[in-house]
Length: 115
Length: 111
Image 1 (tube, helix red, strand yellow):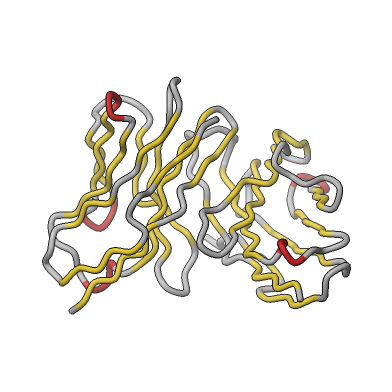
Image 2 (tube, rainbow over the protein chains, first blue to last red):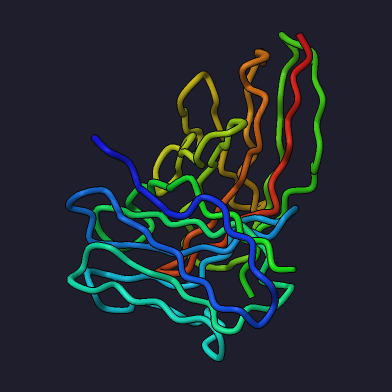
């Protein structure tokens, strides 16, 4: 079974630039999550999708972050404009359905450096 | 607000030593608790989980954790660690659709 795919694996940009990350979840998984993991901290949930609808985005800084999951499969997370404090690893995870009962499978992450 | 605390940030053990990593959470309602592990260069993966029932849960690779409701704790244990257990360990709390991870504990096992 193929795992969660993410690209790019690394990205370096200057502040005020825009960046986008892509995630392809495990086939058939209805729920998709985006996390931000700052160095030395645990992952912080940014947004959760159930199929192509948003379940929770209360931790997403909506003034600069946006995410979409068209057709309930792939998802993109965008930052525009980026700030220095956005430097982090952005993790995508998927699970069969929503709720804590279902194991989340994580991708390798995208490491973003904002200069 | 809900939170998860992992007080051990870095742990160094020799092989065959026993391991206990602390995890405390703050939430008064029903909780689902998880331990995730991230081996060097690999993805986060699930070690074990607690939803209800027996408070002592067993996971992969000989790990276990005990849910003690009165102490709001979910400590991870392994009786004898191996060099291959060197990794970052994260405790996580799920309530409804909200997920909270601890800051992680870095474990180094010396051969």
